[in-house]
Image (cartoon, rainbow, N blue to C red; front, side, top):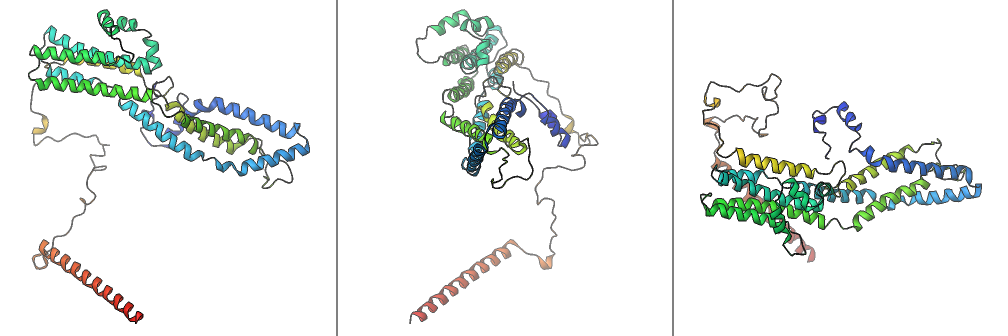
Length: 413
C-alpha cells in the first residue's frame, strides 16, 4: 500500500518535517532497523574480542589491519554507485505508475460516441469496459502477487464476475504457448464492430476513436509486462548491494577505537558508541533500501502500488460512466461572469486578493517612459545604428589583421 503523507507536509515548517521523521510505516527506520541492530551487535562482538580476548601482540596486528582497511576504504565508490542505481530505479518506478492503465478515457469516449440509451446499447458499452478491465486483471495476475492471491485461478475470475464460463471456455481453447492478454481486447474491438453494423456509431471514425483508446490501454499493459519480463540486469543490483554491505562489514574492524600507543591518528577521546559510523550506516543503507523497495513496484512492500485498487476503481468507474452518463449534461444557462458588475469573491487571506503570487512576466512590472517628439527614436534609426556599428566593427577587424600581417612580414625581412 502506498504511504501517503502529502497532507502532512502541506506547509513548510520545522515541526512538520520533524513529525514526518517520526513516522514508522514505510519509513527509513522500518527499512534499516533489523540490519542496523544486527550490525551494532556484530560491532560490539568485535569490540569485546579486540579489547579483552586478544593478546597485546594480536592487538597490534589487529590495529595494523584496521589501519590498512581504513586507508583504502575510499576505493569503494559508494556514492556514485548508489546515486546512479537509485536514479535508474526511480525512473522505472515512475514509468510503471504512468502505465498502470486507467479506464476513464475509454469510458468517456464510449458514452459519447456509442449512441443510444437502450438495453443493447448500454450492454455493449458495459461489455467493452468489462473486457478491457479483464485484460488488465489477466496482466496483473502474472506480475503482482497481491492480485495473484486475490484471483488464484481462472475460475475465480468467473466467480468475481469479470468473465463468464463461456468466455473462459473460449479463452481456454486458444492453443498458444504465450500469454493471452490480447484476447479480451480483441473481443472488445469486435463488439465495437457490431455496434457499427447496427448504426450505434454515427460514423466509422467514431468507432476508430474507441478502438484507439482500447489500443492505448493495451500499450500501457504491454509496457508493464515488459518491465516485469526484463528487469534491471541482476548483476547491477548485486554489485551495489554487495558493495554497500561489504563496506560496512569492513567498518566492523576499521571503525573500532584503537588503544595501542603506536597507532597513527589515535583519537584522544574514546567513544564506546560509533556515532559517526551509525549515521553513515543510516544514510547509505537507507539510500540503498530506497532502491530495494522500488525495484519491484508491484510487490508487497509498503510503498508498492495498489493493483487491486486500480482494478476495482476501473471496473466501478467504467460501469458508472457508461450506465449513467449517456446524454447527461446540465442545461445551458448564462454564467455569472457574463454580468460586467459581478466580481469574483475571494477570502481575506487569499494571496490573489492582494496581488501576491500572481504569475506574470518579469518585465511586465517595469513601465518605460515614452520619449517626446523632439527626442523620438524609430525602429529605422535603431536598425541604422546597428548596421553602422556592425560595419565599423568589421573595418576595425580588417585593420587589425592587416597590421598584424605587415608586422610579421617586416620581422621576416
